[in-house]
Image (cartoon, rainbow, N blue to C red; front, side, top):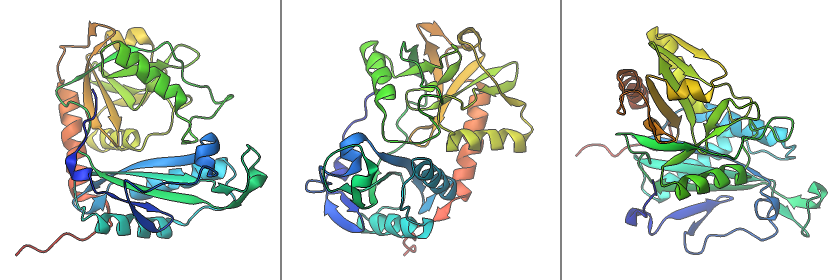
Amino acid sequence: MKQQFNPKNSDLLININGELYHRNVAGISPFDSAVQGGDAVWEGLRLYQGRIFKLIPHLDRLRDSALAMAFSEIPPHEAIIEEIGKTLQANQMTDGVHIRLTLSRGLKYTSGMDTRLNTAGPTLIVLAEHKPPVYDKSGIRLITSSIRRIPPDCVDQNIHSCNLINSILAKIQANAGGVDDALMLDYQGYVAETNATHIFIVQGGEVLTSDTGACPEGITRAAVLEICARAGIPHRVKNISLSEVYRADEMFCTGTMGELAPVIELDGRRIGAGETGPMTRRLSQLFRERTEREGYQVVELASPG
C-alpha cells in the first residue's frame, strides 16, 4: 500500500500558528523543537460532512501528551478548534479530509536538547488534506516485524509524540516484504499494534484486542470497543499471542486515517477465510453509522440550491 498524490492537494493552505501559507512555501524554523529533536505531539483527525469524529477525545489526548512532555504552554481546545475551522474554510473543505495536528514545544534561541532554551512557543501546525481512508477495504496483508514496540519504562507510547522512528523502521520492513504494513510485538512477545494502526481479532464470535501498554490509546480502537458494548457483541482486551492471530477467524485494523480495514494475510498465512469476515463487516457498518450522525461541527455545509 502506497498513498498516491492527490491533485486536489496541489494548492493546499497550511496553518502555522494562525497564519496560512501555500504548501510550497510553508515551513518552520530549524530552531523549532520539532526539527531539533522530534519534540512535538500530534493527532490525526477525520472530517465527515463538516464534522470531525471524536474531536474532543483527540484534543484531550493531544493535551495529555503535551502535559506528559512538560510543555509549558498548551493552547486551549477552543483555540485549536478555531484554527482547524479557519484552515478548512480557507481550503473549502467539508468532507473526505484527513487533518494532521502537530504541536511542538516551540522555538529555541540556539540548538540543543535543553528545554530551557525554548523561549517562544508552542508551534501549532494544522495540515488538512483531501484524503479518503487509505487502506484497501477488500483486505490488507501484513508481516510480523523484528522491530519491537517500545515498553513504557523506555518511552511511554501513550505519549503521542512525533518521534516515529520505531514505526518507520517497521514500515520499511513491510515495504521490503511487499506487504501493506507490519505487525509489531511488545518485548514480552505479545501483539502490540501495526506500525500505524491498532489490531483486533475475532475468535468464536468474540472480538479481542491487545492492551495499550506498548502502543497509544487509540481513538478509533476505543470507538470500536464502545460499539461492541452498545451492540452486545462479546469483546475483551487481553494479551494476544502471535499464534492466536494465526488461527483467528477474522482480523482487522483500526485508525483514523484508515477507519476499519480487514487483514486477510499475516506472514504469508491466510487469516480465516482470507476475506472480509462477517464481524468485520458488521462493525464497519456500525462505525460508518456513527460517523454519519456524530461529530463536532467545525465547518458549515453549503445550503442546497
